[in-house]
Image 1 (cartoon, rainbow, N blue to C red):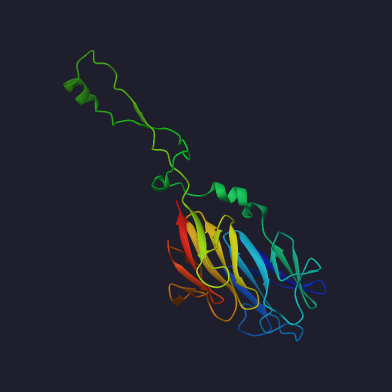
Image 2 (image 1 turned 90 degrees about the horizontal axis):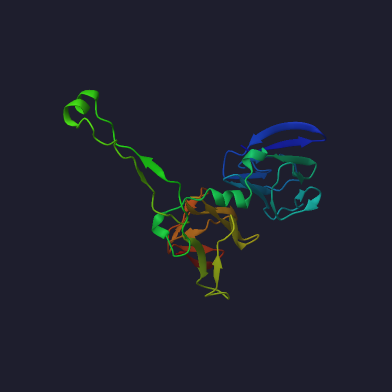
Length: 250
């Protein structure tokens, strides 16, 4: 599990495991990581973790957030990155075995026969099936003395294909009618400083998670909470006042 190491002036104050999908950082006591210092905004930043990937989001803080010495509004975290909030530093630590890049992630996707399309067949290894052998007594009683050996039947599972790709179509606003293919592991949607959510492409489907904003995204007319929610074909999402439809392209 990845973790954050909070320090000031070279002194480690605490280690915080990223045990939640969204960890908020700020001066208010309601934050997951509270830093009681006037240089820190009430809700300063958040770290969102989905599977083995984490990214930092500055929540429109007064004094801003630095990553490796550079101002950052949104930053995909890598092992060893240092987040700076005023005099405080937060180091992001993740074991390399936990960090799968996009190519490795794609290799873990479940293959389902229901989404098979021409030209997308993948041959699976053959599995040998052998019937249970009879007992010695049954063999003597029921089989001819010179019977041929029982045949071993090898069966090959039907070819399977990757699940359908996800996409969203904008239903309202200036970009109405536009389609966005969800080809990345993480796709960010919304308006920074107002409302932001991410759609994560996981091996068993697509999930939407709230990242930024006082109001949560609306899914099929109902606000979601801070946890990830799996999307179904033709779900209607509303983020920052823009409606969009999630669908699967077979």
